[in-house]
Image 1 (cartoon, rainbow, N blue to C red):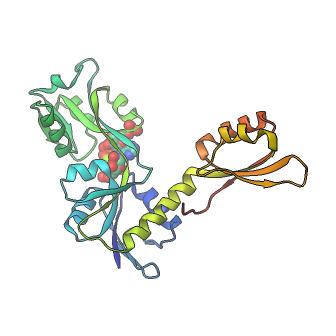
Image 2 (cartoon, protein in one colour):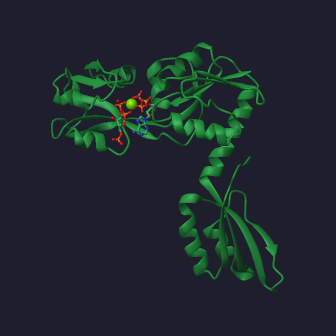
Image 3 (cartoon, helix red, strand yellow):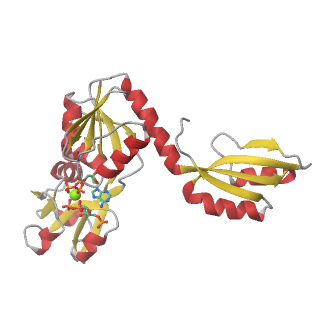
Length: 279
Ligand SMILES: Nc1ncnc2c1ncn2[C@@H]1O[C@H](COP(=O)(O)OP(=O)(O)OP(=O)(O)O)[C@@H](O)[C@H]1O
Ligand SMILES: O=P(O)(O)OC[C@H]1O[C@H](OP(=O)(O)OP(=O)(O)O)[C@H](O)[C@@H]1O
Ligand SMILES: [Mg+2]
């Protein structure tokens, strides 16, 4: 059985479980269960803290896992990134009291609170800056106000948490993070199948199918608006000089593409969700 580590808590857990379900795997029904065997798919899921997943996978105790790139790098484990999974996007940044820092040079000799000490130490060491990291488990934004640190280094998504603590981002981006599939020393056969299925879910989430009717003479202009992944499927319509076109479009762009196709004279533009895909 392929042994897969899945986050049991935190920002990544819900979407990871949803993606696996959409990929056709069964999951635990009781959120206190730590292991679930999907016998039909020959996979065993282990529900673990996202921070621990790289340790299990890197040691070979488990074959693959879903975690955050930031957590993988902070763990120092030998696990490697196999693919990024298009969710859990965040940046990892330094922040301090408004106006207190203009760049990372100002961190020399200062205290930086973080839940990711290795990530921060490595980043500063590579740039020749000696600062003291103060390891906290979470809510690090409070560390400056409470006097245990001069600055923080933490996950930033909307920036709302920083703003409410009166902190401002400074210095370069430490890391662009996202949810990733990681692998260790075990190269099990089932890994490719899991990856193919997860990629199928990503495509299904990211793209829609667009169908429309168009005058054949406008086809080139319409293909410039929406070219599809390979190229559009074009079928003749009974009405002379008209064709039916089918093309994949990213969900984000769907409305804009519909407007532009309508401007070209397209009719009966229909958008349908993709349930699953293998490209
Ligand atoms: N607000 C957020 N937006 C996007 N990604 C986030 C956010 N907070 C954390 N993450 C990402 O989620 C992953 C897991 O982080 P973590 O386990 O800390 O989640 P959590 O919700 O903070 O849980 P906890 O702090 O209770 O352990 C990390 O890769 C982190 O970058
Ligand atoms: O930029 P924002 O959208 O405000 O999100 C960023 C916040 O989200 C995470 O906190 P979480 O809820 O995981 O709490 P924690 O600090 O205890 O981990 C992260 O550690 C930041 O504090
Ligand atoms: Mg957190």
